[in-house]
Length: 100
Length: 167
Image (tube, rainbow over all chains, first blue to last red; front, side, top):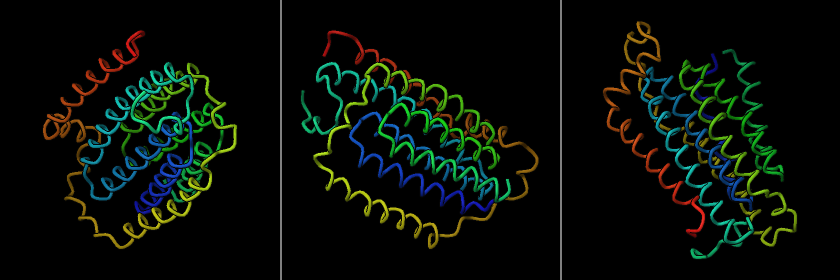
């Protein structure tokens, strides 16, 4: 059994990669996938800490995070598709204004 | 799970995460993310969270990634990032900032407060899944029901957003 701190460090690595991905990519779909990466990293930390304390509260939280992530992806992709229909382009640099 | 299998799975997770961020084609990124989610499911299993491991495979690697791949196919991107990046220097600031964030997280993990001691010897009597189901339908019943409302609201909102002729 690997100590939980290893899981926590792996979670920190994945979270950092997700943050960098959101910042350096221009495609909103890839930015979304990087956000999923960050959510998963935090989920992994929750499960690891729950395992260390011997409780399952962390696992319940992870279940809620998964549900919120599913809702977020559905709404976010619908917004991206709606923007693409109007603008016919898909780069976040074109979307610096909060209007059409 | 021993240390060697853990490092193997961790290396797969980090490598696929880097692939997602580095590869230009979003379809490649989506496939990298599927492997990444599966490797995290393996880690859940090794932590004794077998329900979450399978929920991860079904919900994330199944449903959410199908949605992503579907959106990528509909939008047919891939030409957006071929040209030179007009804000390349600004974006490269993300590298030192990312390193600073990682050091911050690492510092908290090392110097942070010690976790509470494991609670009693009750853990061995029931499986993790039974305990998870018990607290989910007792202590966390209200958030659980609110999750269903959230999913319903998201579904209605997506139908509204995706309807033609409204934008």
